[in-house]
Image (cartoon, rainbow, N blue to C red; front, side, top):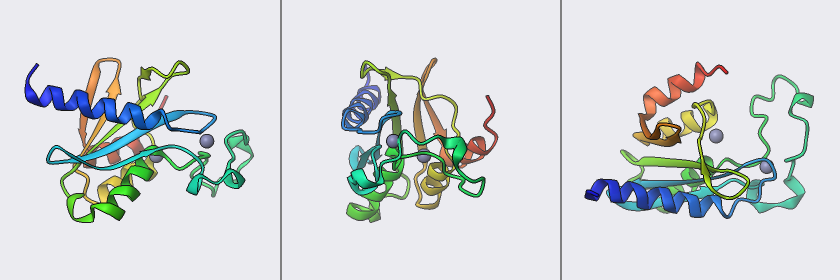
Length: 157
Ligand SMILES: [Zn+2]
Ligand SMILES: [Zn+2]
């Protein structure tokens, strides 16, 4: 295995470890942000600030008004990784790569699905993240964040 493949494996494994910390009742996801071989941000999905009082994992999404464009319950793993990087390594975000993975019910890595989260795609692009890496049926897939953001807006089932 060449060095860059080894690195990708290492970063995917780090994202899997993050996802293992998720407390969301719907979905368990993990994300890490890497620049120059160094992890500069990490996150998993759970209620904002870890507050149980803010948990709404079991709320019916269809009960929310159409103006509420983010109908998800928890802070997304990518959002949290972005906040973490902004807080701790703001000067290293430009040109970085974000890895995102999702776990199945058994805690094993599963396919991420097509890009659709416009909150995360816009945020990643705005703070200078250059690449977005997802795990698909075909394997690891790397997108330019600009393309990823456009794709997120054209999502369909
Ligand atoms: Zn949740
Ligand atoms: Zn998101």
